[in-house]
Length: 215
Figure 1 (cartoon, one colour):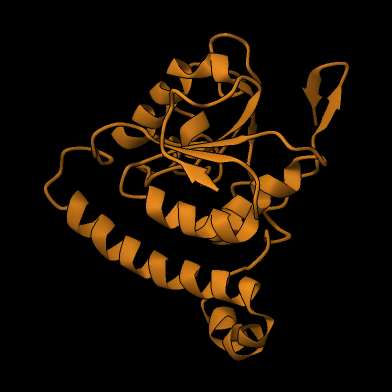
Figure 2 (cartoon, helix red, strand yellow):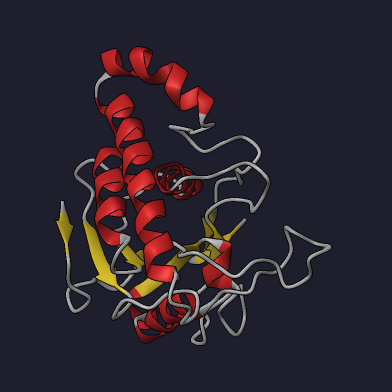
């Protein structure tokens, strides 16, 4: 079940902030260190801040959390944790969602996805296969902006997003229809696409202790 409205997000929801393309590492010698978020991820971070009172917790990809003033929390103190480890294993949108859900303990918290407007539909496809009947809200970060204002950015994203639709569609089909999984296993393995969170990227389950989220 999905709704596309920020005004309806209940208090206590878990925010899921999916990153857009970034501008690479701040330190080239540290490829898995802090990232240069780019305009689109800064916009996602700003949208998170504007909705901070709706969240009890935010799970973000690193390019979004690195766009916050403090990568570990919103300005009101809402904790921000990583969906998955930033590493050399590709984590497609579908797998990133699985990584985020794997971090949550059992519970029925509503989910609120904050993402680039041209990314939302693909996220909705993946999350509908992963989250079942859980209440989910989908919120666009704002008008479509990209990493910066270079003329090629929209064209590059269109090509990348088309490939992403194909990969995530295959992953969703593998999860929804077990018979399809056996047929799709070989092509998915060739592109190193994961139905579930890759082990190299996996982070541990969070705990809610006396009203506080802990790793």
